[in-house]
Image (cartoon, rainbow, N blue to C red; front, side, top):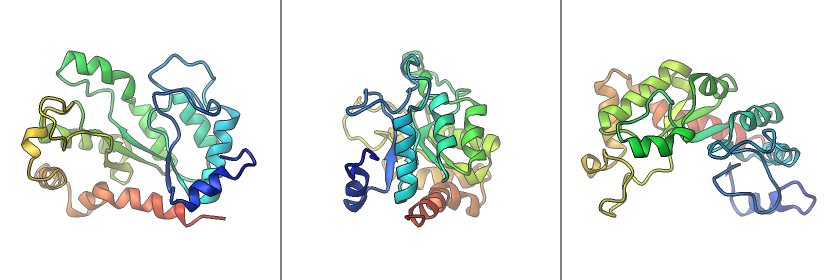
Amino acid sequence: MSDGGGRGERLYKRGLRHHQLRHDKRDKVAPLGDIYTEPARLGGLTAFGADVVKECNRLGIVVDLAHAAHETVLGALKASTQPVIVSHTSLDARPGKNPRMAKMMAPRLISKDHARVFADAGGVIGVWTKLSDSIEEYVGGLKAMADVVGVDHVGIGSDTDILSTRAGRSTNAARPGLAGGFFKAPVAEMLRQGFTPDEVGKIGGGNFRRVFDRVTTSHA
């Protein structure tokens, strides 16, 4: 993005405001940093990765560190002058009941210490629906994360096929009980489990909006 070719500016002008730095695939241009589903080979965030983070800060683009290894996260937080998010993960204390799925998901979950790093930098962590066997269990995951990092740093996680109509292909056992609309179900359950309306508003989108507004209004 900061290679002198103006790619960051072009993407910004096309509407990019939220950039996930890493994923499961290798980078097409140059390595940005290690991911948590492969052995570390880059020493965390690369110099190019740091340039991308700084360019996102300059332009006003939210940096999303989902899939980034812990050392990559630390490097990105050091490089960033703005809060970051991790759009989809859960605490590793919630392994799930399906052994095959738990094994697949284990590298994608974060420790309490890892979660606190995001919160201490003012960021937000989106809690996955994956590995939840019921909406009650999913809200329990939100509560567990809030107990670790505080309500102001928790959000509803993205990257889920919970609304998929492809029978048998969802990775979430709670999906059949959510046919009436995903968002309504966790809101009702959050209130039932003791969250206040103000806390529901924060987790349901207010926290992400706070970070999004701060980052996107910082455009140089």
